Amino acid sequence: MTAQPRIGSVWARRYPDAPQHDSDFRVTGVFTIGTVTYIETEEIESGALCRGRLEHILEYAKPVSD
Image 1 (cartoon, rainbow, N blue to C red):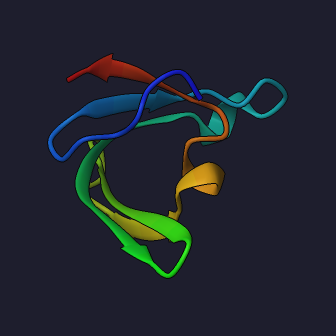
Image 2 (image 1 turned 135 degrees about the vertical axis):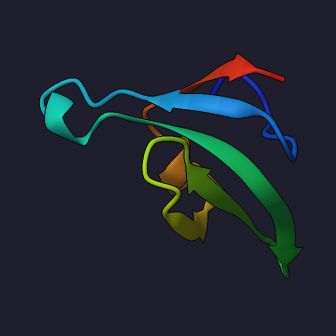
């Protein structure tokens, strides 16, 4: 992970062996429960919402904009 996500930042997720799952998403929320950090995202193309652990969502992601 190269940067920490901020609300409103846009990220590009690129899977090396599964390009059909590539997507761009916008961070809509960042929160911590105990010692685990979660982020909420909105896919740019479809508008689908997602919530997950920070390390899982950003595993193949790189920031596009702040």
